[in-house]
Length: 343
Ligand code: SAM
Ligand code: SF4
Image (cartoon, rainbow, N blue to C red; front, side, top):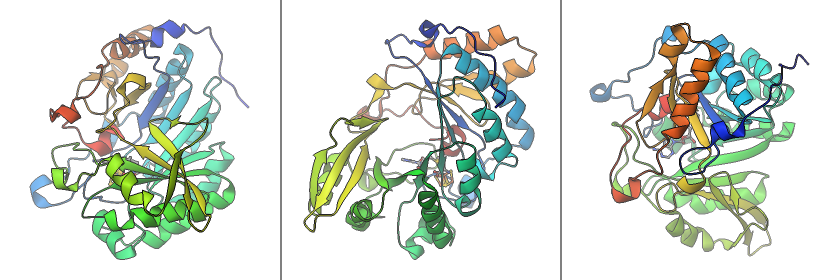
């Protein structure tokens, strides 16, 4: 493997004002997507989607330069997201180059699964082992309603293909009252029947066009009560937190056992332990998903900046990372597009 030069890191560079070490970079590779989830990229006339032009995206060369610098600074974990990361042309070669970066311990991908039936093997060959796949329903008709597409079967096949190749598969389910609440128990059962960790995410009011409203929100504790009717939930020994998820084992009456995660950005936010920095598909550094403060890395990069200047902006963005978000207080500081930020 063509490993990159390894230089001495100063871990202090990645510590923010609240003593959190920022070791995890999330790249939104594109704001484009082959689905149109109603809560993320609604397509109606009034809220016409404003998509970036190709030249507005950072090129793969630019992205590689940033990732290498971030890794030299001590970041060791990367997530590729979007939009749909797998629709970007050339993404597989890009992932191959990322895999060659010495010091980058793990690359994970968040995907809607539409292209997994054809790309899963290539991802596995590139060394990716962990996939988060979004699936809010197991009903084809409802899938069409939520995503605007009839590709449920293809996504399902993609999930099965990924699991059969040996990927650690996590299914991300956005919990929406009145939309998929009658399937929470079915998803819990699925976690027992298949080797997938099912992770329920609290529905967040992100972006100006979100379909979020108070009635559609269900907290993780209410969700747990519903799922508790299907089986006994116990905190997973030795792995209470998996990233932002609180992980439980579920044991059904018939003995089925599975793993369920709850991601509760609203009811139990995890800001105190947040270790993330985001790079949006518009090339802006963003220290908090739910706070619109961003730094324009793309303009700096394209003005001929030196590595030190880029490093300085990364450092400054980390120092400016807000202590936490204010969703629970009903003060929303996030009007950005989820597909551009990357979730
Ligand atoms: N297209 C990929 C996918 O859907 O997995 C990656 C990008 S998507 C923006 C990342 C994650 O954000 C998905 O799991 C999606 O369900 C979640 N998401 C989007 N909008 C959300 C919202 N308002 N509340 C909670 N999760 C949301
Ligand atoms: Fe696309 Fe993911 Fe947004 Fe759905 S949640 S529209 S799949 S980017």
